[in-house]
Length: 257
Length: 249
Image 1 (tube, each protein chain N blue to C red):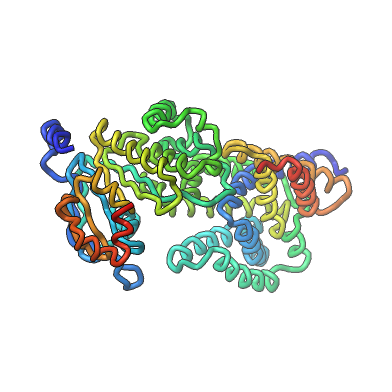
Image 2: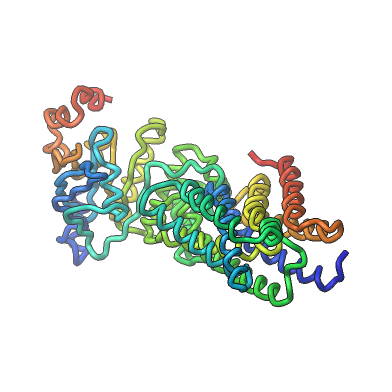
């Protein structure tokens, strides 16, 4: 194991990242956007590359690119009626190409799969605070968002604006992906949002239980994954995801019809 | 029903102004006209039936009335009109694990905190729509068509709107279920003086329940009291060959 302080920093930031990501992930899954989420997370790469080039913290570069991509997706979807996965697919290929050109090899690997040592005290503070903000905003958005997913016409009929809640949701999601880049890595961050939700879906009987299970499982798989990673000196991303897969397999035995 | 209208006219200071007035309404999708020059008006407390063949633009008319799609012409709701909308169907997203109760709570104006008042009125609305409170814990996806229809009506009347837009499902509700849903609508209209706009596929319903009828086939073909406006000639024009089938069952 690494010295304890570092492990505590990593665990804290990991758990808070998971809190925000797995909550948002529940909506990603029921909105049938799982692959969208996955692909959107890769948009971070060129942002990381640019940030490294101009010598700022990669997390900000990633956040900027992700937010722009989220807004772009929302805007193009609204204007063209193209499905969001096709739009993000377009973004993705462009940004992956850019990313590979811009990001140096070692950093590329880290930003794709995460690095346990990358988190400093200051990073952890930023991650914890931002995660809490994302979590609370998602909570506030959740009724409107659910209604927009379940019945957009009914949402509009009571004066809600599904478009706006969808945009807010995409931006929050982009932000949460940016948070996970250092620790989990951009490739696997999409999985951190989806895995707890799909397992939770197998266990749940209501919206409330679904959202709760999603958050609980997200936090559990991240904690377990980080502890395993630090014990065996693995990169944290893959070990978090594999522990999530373990929970998913277990959840299959509890599946409700 | 006319005596009922009368009463409402006296009760209500807006009584003489129609609750809905539509003039020369046109809607097109991708330059193709879906609705053309529709004009009609609805008085408070009336039941307006909208009939027409498949693809006549009936559901489009509803969606345009509640502001879901852009249009040309004029749609004037009276200032105090509060609309409840019952769509033909809900969604087919089995992945959203909503209970009936949670579905109701989504209507709350409260974004996050408990809405005590709303929860109380849910029980009240369930009763008025002949559903047992036990249904609240059921999953929305497990309801029968008839139950879902009632839940949708209850959802629409939650918060006491004074206008109900009811888009009847084309198929799937059995005869008994269908009969009772109309009794329910009728009851709502009687007890609450609600104005009801209903898309119907059953001419019997129109003759029995509606004060006015609007025949629609992209353009408005007739408008008025069912017995005057719905001549057999008119019905044939509207539905073509299949008119007699519709008429007799």
